[in-house]
Image (cartoon, rainbow, N blue to C red; front, side, top):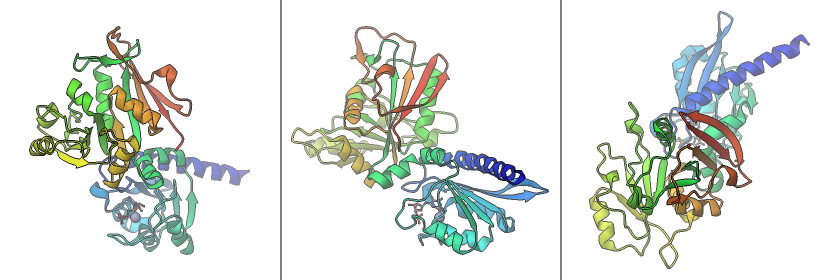
Amino acid sequence: MLERSASARQEALDRRFMAAAIRLSRQHLGLTAENPSVGSLVVREVDGVPTIVGRGVTALGGRPHAELQALGEAGEGARGATIYATLEPCSHIGKAPPCADAIVAAGARRVVIATLDPDIRVAGRGVAILKRAGIEVDVGCEEVAAKRAMAGFLTLRAKGRPFVTLKLAVSADGRIGRVGAGQVSITGPIARRAVQIMRVEHDAVMVGVQTVVEDDPLLTVRLDGLAQRSPLRVVVDPLARTPLAARMFSERDCSRVLVLASAKAQARAVGRLRDRGATVETITSDYKGRFEPREILRHLGVRGVKSVLLEGGAETARRFLEAGLVDRIALFAAETVVGESGVAAPIAEDSVPPDFNQVGEESFGSDRLIEYERPL
Ligand code: AOF
Ligand code: ZN
């Protein structure tokens, strides 16, 4: 009985530290290229109290890995300690020696892992190295939460395409805007700031060219201290119609703009967009110059984009939904009423496809954010 309560206490402690490691891992979402943003902690007893003596998150650009940094901070403190890692420590020789070997060399006693690494160079070999060295290994602690935080990496590995979040702001009468009216404020300022935080955590934001023509959005992050965290801005634009006067090009911090055009686009139009500072890439389209959503995502995946925030418009959203290529829906439900002239939302609270589960609900001022996800 006594023993069981000790192990229950240890499990609760593990969950708490792993939750902290997951929070740490979120700090570098959107900044680790094709690598996952992993969080790692080194924990040891100091005066009888489990204490964090080292922490690490995958560095900008993807390296060094989280565990190496956590071990570096802990130094000798890692001897006999417990290592928490949101992903299985790697076993392959990349730009640095494997994290699993570094953990063995540091003399850790126990390693707690949230989820195994699907990378074929690792896939269980990290655990095997640790166990062979006599280290106690526990896998599966807070696995669901860790997988959600790493959904981009896991989706790219498993499906060869980025994880897609569809963001929608829907008025009380089921509209997302008004034709020919430019940007219409559906949600309030607090919700709009929340959207910018979502941008920070994604590798790319994406819109159809019609949204650029009608709304002329910036799609950047303008929160104090986070202006450098604007993700890659992708415009789906088969005929290279993106206006050269779009605000996207005049932004001071001018994060990168990637225009995806088809072979139907005129070379002159493409050339002008390039002169304006955009990267223009050509992807396969049908005979009318239309793209398959799957082809767009495949192309972005090859570029190492692991997560995409799809921000509009209605037609683009509908096409991704129909193709079954939306993994998560972030639906802001506002109290605003747009009226008859509004553009109908592709989905609303009462028409979310049945394979999505509601995973959260939060309030931002008078707006509500309801989040839905399909099982990974
Ligand atoms: C870890 N800790 O923090 C991360 C890991 O190209 P490399 O050598 O950097 O290896 C990339 C792979 O390493 C990546 O596909 C994933 O399997 C793993 N990422 N592993 O031990 C980390 N970011
Ligand atoms: Zn590693």
